[in-house]
Image 1 (cartoon, rainbow, N blue to C red):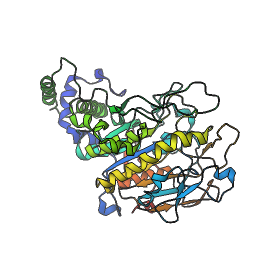
Image 2: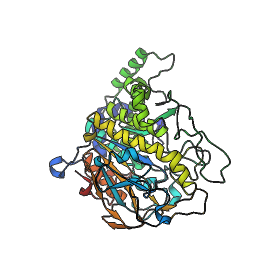
Image 3: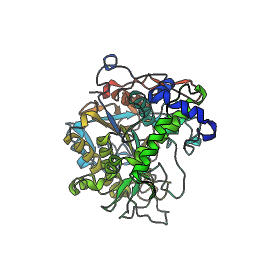
Image 4: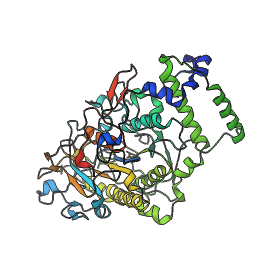
Length: 493
């Protein structure tokens, strides 16, 4: 139950009155901005009906992925080379042979840039204008702004009502940074002042890892079976309680309770001071009931229903199977699914944060997990006729240093936000394009700088939401959803 809602704060009379406002009534009272019509917004506005956001926490190196520097000196280029792609004249890192074959479907952005070389998931994925490391581990800090997925859900709820068979906003494979021994939940993918009813509905991974991960550094003593290196075929995802009822609670009894609640929801004139809390209550109740009663939810998460050959195309890793689950959830009706590549076991140096053991981890874990999964997601969506209506975005919080640090074992690249890369596919994004250019060492932007806020604004545009729309904070003050970001038409087809 959201921390903003306490049952004792709302009398029975007010609860009886709340229903008459209806799904639209309360929501419309919250809205300070609304999506614009396609005719007002220009090309590809609203072409994306759903978004799959792939977020490799820790930040991949641009040099070994989408912006290799084959002519740079060894201390910049490193020991990994580049290969040609399906887009003439465009190369990618040599550990991306499958992705290389789908580059002609992508828009690669080689000029992402911002001033904060921190693990600022919240900065990268919200409209907040500035960032400090002090709030990274405080998901409910009042300085935070709503996550992009929360904004998408907020406007979808206003347009279509709160009821949905499959949750509109879902996070995979589990709450961010919840499977490490030495840290706490990280900020970023939360609804902030919109209220916790707009947080993602988090999935839960159930399965066993099969492979010991390469060490994060030479000083690491403990080893981990890491699901990002491999998982057993029987692995699957669930929502806690999805599709199940308590033993004494039969479906008939549950339906009768729902009917009774529906008869209570017929009042009017809920006080404005309670509107947000009442909305959060009904939103959470609706989501909880959909998870308990919906076969669609349970089936969408059960990746074991897919042919073995397709699962193997994605890769039998946690990231690969998460991408497959994301496709299934979108197919079932979810509108915004985030797949995090999250630290597992240990936080320091976890996921893509390769301060040490850079090359062994890229070769043995990171790129073998990313390359097949990403390519399979793009081609699978295309084969099903879903790519034109599904926006797929690969982005992170920053990039990595152009200069290789040769001191740690396995070498390292450190935090770098002056230039890095992102990639878009489908949903109205350009097909077969490279936007922006970094300098000869991949350390600074030479052409067309793109900020995380610009990328968010462009995503909103493609999803049919004006970046100029606003949402209210807890005091009713309007906040522009993408902050200072603007639509980058260079990224749109």
